[in-house]
Image (tube, rainbow, N blue to C red):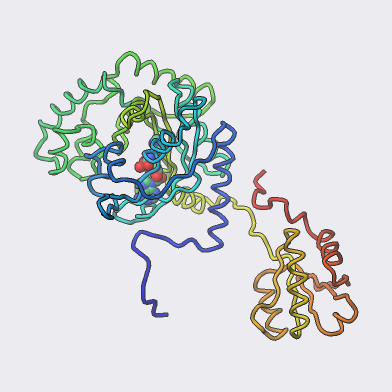
Length: 435
Ligand code: HAM
């Protein structure tokens, strides 16, 4: 096939067999988050560019290099590169923050856009499941949020996931740390990339997550933030570790996690695993206690995480995790002529209203070709309507596996009775066989 227009590099189609896997992962994630009182909030894909510049930060790779931004009229608009900024705007703008706190909201399958170099696990359009929680300063909230990710991975059967945590302090402890970083990197200035030379002046923390070889090579000898935490940040971090131990979530402290986004304060964390592509980061998150105020709201402690769904699915495939079986077609109603085809459609409509998955001929094929198609679609049962079936008001319903036939009346009632007897309740949610 000579396709005239192809898809954009770094974007993916999800074919039906894979879409069922996506639905399963999203459903498990929403269910797990729901056990902590998290509800879904839906936000637009496009936002004002300024929203991301102000929150994600103008010295980050995301804002400097990766955003899809365009002008429309006199507005600069950006396809969201992540979910947190839009959620902060939305909880303020919709008044959710004016109600009872904490507010716990999530996104089930948020498309995000970053102009990165595509490779395994790194796309230009990717999707996140994430939770954002507002009005919860206690480290108990940090442990709760981290617990959601931990439980999602467990429910999905993903193994070998490691939790790495760090604290990157607050405006009280950062100035001393920034000075130490600047002194260290200035001593090795020749090895820094041009962007980092500039960042060193404006935002030295960002040098720590630069992926350029020279800059990344210097990281191991750099001063660590944990030696500079103020009393409050130190206590918060100790409190988080105590709580993670209490809920039996293993973790390790990695003082070099700084995350690539500017809004974080105190706790930052990453769930890392092999098989999630280049970086191996399945999920990242942390606290952003100052962001709501920076965006014009009252001081509101907040935190959250974003989990890359492509990476989750990649790891699940690589580890051979179980997915629920695909839903089969319950019945194929074949037909020999026009009157029979209309009857087939009528019966199919009645059974579909009950929730059964029923197909009939919509092409005008021969009976033989119809049965071939029914087979291909994995139909559990089939029947063929000819003039004698219509006269008798009954047809033989054939089990497609065993070939065994049973006579059933050609009424919604008759076929429904048969299918109810032979199959599980069609409205039972079969995709969730994990429970
Ligand atoms: P992030 O670390 O930039 O954080 O992204 C979160 C997750 O999205 C990553 O761990 C990864 O699984 C996935 N991801 C990121 N970029 C790509 C990509 N190019 N291709 C495929 N997957 C990708 C955030 O976005 C923050 N908003 C998370 C957060 C929420 N922090 C607090 N609340």
